[in-house]
Image (cartoon, rainbow, N blue to C red; front, side):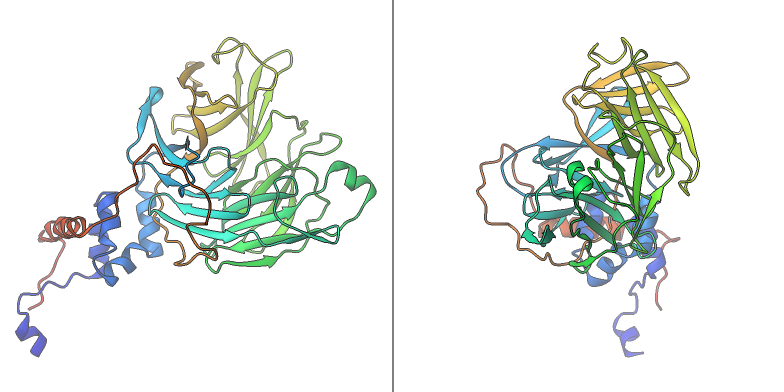
Amino acid sequence: MEEEEKNPSSIDIVSDLLEDIFLRLPLKSILISKNVSKRWRSILESKTFVERRMSLQKKRKILAAYNCKCGWEPRLLPGSSRCKGNEEIVYLHCNAARPSLSCDGLVCILEPHWIDVLNPWTRQLRRYGFGFGTIFGVWSAFSPGNWAMGFGKDKVTGSYKVVKMCLLSLSEIRVRDPEMEYSVLDVETGEWRMLSPPPCKVSAVKRSVSVNGSIYWLQNTIDRVCKILALDLHKEEFHNVSVPAMSVTQETHIVNLEDCLAIANTDTNAEWKLEIWSTDTEVKTWTKTYSIHLENRVASLERQNRWFTPVSVSKEGNIVFYDNHKRLFKYYPRKNEILYLSADTSVISSFFENLAPLPLKSTLPYPHPRRRTKCPLSRPNEFGILDIILATLVLVGSIWSPLLFRVKL
């Protein structure tokens, strides 16, 4: 009663209405608003708000690497560029030579001695150690020739996980049965756990993809038969996936195409074409969804050592894809036309805004003691007090709508 007398005209905004207001704000205002109060931060980092904000996005962007070897932490560059075909490209400032994996707008970058997990939108970066593995009875650190990696999201708990597994060479599979290590890192806790081995021996695999709570690897077998290994990130169990009858070549890759697992195979024989096979949500039935003829249509007549990877599909069925020479294209199936979008574009993945918070601490300190060079790009400014005041005024302006507030009398 005393509080009411002291504040007779105070405004009490219930959390649901406050969340509706936040949904209407631009991204920068949301990020600044997190620093205004604990209550605002808890709303903006809640699972409900993150999912609602994500569902409002009408079209995915394309994430590409802005190659820079300055040594500074990776970050999303401000703004974007729009190329032909009305495709929007955003750039991640990073060393493009480092392997990178993505899932739901988050990026996992594999450095020689650690792992960086980055939410480009919230500017949060967390660093984790690889740990060590036992290979042939000897402790050895991470090296690209010994490990295969994966990054994905547990669709039940919502936690992000990094997976590593020790790989054998084809010759070792024939003559040895060495000890193997399969482990998973929970990004939330920063702890590694051991996994039970997969149902079959693992040889060389290609880059992994994350789809609907599982990570998939395409295997290079001795007989070139197409095989896909999967890991359910909630059960943390490996299993094999049935695949269409085809041969695995250097030009064969698996991708996440609009939340469905797909196989992209570039046929360089008599008829030069890109064939794409997609599954249903349960990864049980495969359907050939695209067969794109490439002859005289993709900026170069070169066939050998050239392959194409799809990035995204629009509601109209138009598909964006790129080749291993950094050329970006768009195919219109109704017109049967291929549009050349851009050159020198290091595509990482399709991309959309995700405000999911990362845990507060890394298991390794950042910045890591390493040599840095002067970056040609200026460092981003942190949010100052004027930014916070401006964001507060924007929110207060939204509050003064008779439909979005109630006055406590």
